[in-house]
Image (cartoon, rainbow, N blue to C red; front, side, top):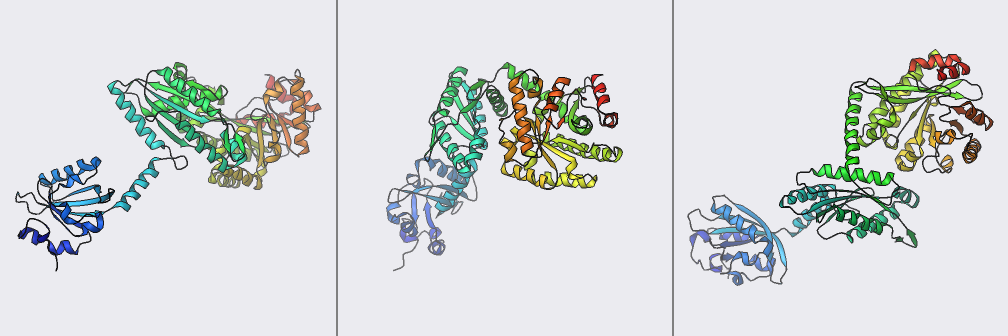
Length: 579
């Protein structure tokens, strides 16, 4: 016998319920009718299949008895919306099944008749799969995919919440900026699989050294941040940093190998709820830079000195942005001398920034770090590149019959990794009619160490196109002669620090001699930087150094002076430098 809607509940013969009978029995959803107290008056047969309950077993019981305790409020909010006159209300909550488990449901409800009877018709459907997908997407959007800890978005949200909670006077909030020392060397030499394993193990180790209420986030690469709320004082934050550093000194076991990857930590703290989250993170980052500058494997605390330096950097950044907008960057050129002929064979492009207050020129040391940190270095280098190619094009036309043919510029790892950089260089060379071998790109050891595979590929691509590539400031980075063999190089520039005491320090003399001999064995040209005395020059000539640059010959000058110096010859270049 067919069971009807009205036979399932006490409201037998109620024409209002009978009107919905055909719709309810044909629907795949579970339909229920509740009174104004939320008591079940009707439950459709589908309840048995979906939840395991016989419909009759629910009759006379309140719906909130079957909701998960954490979701009861959701039901009450939906019922209140209907009472206030809403056409319908939707609630997503967990419904208790017969076996004791909970099933995520979406319940759409509406008053059967807005006549004050309070009867509510609701349709319930299983949304467990959708909920799981939603939660998975939320998890993916809020966590680091490798380590499973929070990502930057969650970190900044937790940091802002922590600052707001400090309005109630809850202690000190501490931010620790953590960086793995020389992690790139491990990653490049042993592969990304080992690198990822170390990052994962480090995240687990950090989690074991913080409280459950603290937040650990990975910002990308080898950078982690810890937010610790309600600390007793700033000293407690420093003690936490020390424990973190001690944890980093413990070796990692990856397969049969053991690795030690120490940590540098920057610490910033505040008891002021009005502080900005970004400012606090930036302060911890500045402290981290100081920890690295002072030798790594240590913690540094943000203080007034760093604040002063940060203020200076902000002023420098504003000046740099203004210089880029108002043509305040000046490119000068320092001649490079062939030690066999004494003639200038090229020059190095060196950027200067005009000081708007004094109208004097600031040296690169005053603004290059800021340019790199703020992302302005690329725009600045693009200006230098364009100016250098334009200038060498003009010199090639005006200095016919001389050795002068080349111009050198410095490039960064970020430039090399940019797929558009190689194309831009080639296009500009073609536009100005400059042969690729007339352009020299100089990279430092640090740049090569930090360069990604794509950056190294870009470097090889430019060299294959005919551009010369050289290793700049050799000896100041990781001091490995292996770079002379591993990377696509045409020349090496010996750093000024080795030239300064060349006539007094036998160790420096031996190093310079070794660099020259090995470079020549690898068919590389050798350029000595920072030559300032005749004695240094004589020694370099005796060692068969190929080229040199420095104040002994000439300081960096504006482009128009290069013509004069090239035509002047070696002796007059010396005289010009002396003046």
